[in-house]
Length: 476
Image (cartoon, rainbow, N blue to C red; front, side, top):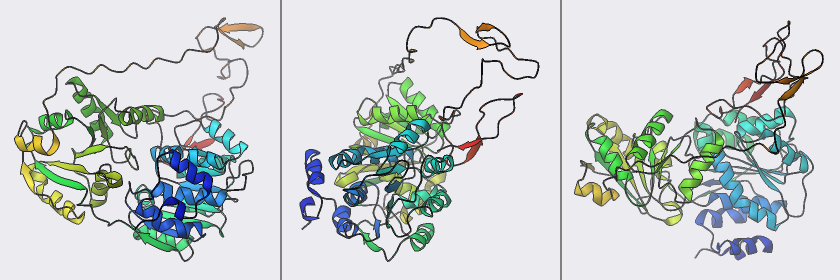
């Protein structure tokens, strides 16, 4: 019989906050790991996404932090996650619990204001939730110091390895208190993750509550064989079903094309990929969560770690590349004990490779040949014929400038004042005359992709004859 939260040694304010949120019984991973984590031991948790890992490490860290207060720029605990969306989800889940203890919890991720994050760090953050790239940026810019971090949790460590973040993770871990407590959660604990464990953890206690293959008790898996000619219509009919659906494709260009096509035939579909600015990604995910957009088209990278309740169907429009990707995608449904359906659409030439991949993922599914309108397609997915009425594009109102504009830009054009009317004037040396130095505010300008995972690129600040000052700021 699983213990209740009040039997695990949690602080009363945390119990009250959990009760207010309607949470009374811990998930298996929480019941297994919390006693050891609260005792100060290093803990390894092997569990799939959707198993409740966030509260497993979050409650442990917050309990350890109780009674202290962070100094400016020196957080006391750190949670590292691979993606922005996951960081924001973890922050949303833990912030109310932190407030119950009078602690400050903040997220530092790419695609959002560097200046605001730096200001929050300057005021003092007890629990920092961050992606490796943006945290590395803050360290390089001197807006954060990691030496006071005594409690660290690394979530989705295997995905961190897959995305190439482990060198940055090691650089970050090297700056934290070497005598501190480390918690690591991952679907697998082998390969590069095992090297991370050996390097940074001391006699860790391992708790494993999920197999490294798909759960056949909560998911139904189907492989649907379609012709190339029929596939677009099959995808459309599946997308027109009732219920929340995630469709995975391989590239961001395919994401945009498919979302546009579905909207043109009456299906309200949102597009999520790494090429979108963070504001757009947050909006699309929010509309999917609140039910405004029932269908989400996504790439693997964009959807890593996303938790949305009541996703009843996952569709591999493009079959995944390997078993880990299959399990990751499938894990968007059947979360927290709920049931769900996973469908892989394949053409004739993909049969053998997909069969090998699903077998390695622990999935047993028969190939069923379907065409648009087939009874089996309807039975498995709830497919319907789209309405054909295009979904109007949502109009985002531009922000209006604060206060009235009283005139043009005033600058010093090499003598008296003049008004800048939109034509750029240059002096004889090639230096722009804008009435003084252009100052970097600290917030970075993004390119169309919105981010780059941890890489560095030059920031073009004050210009002299069109040349960069050479200062570098990295992305995510």
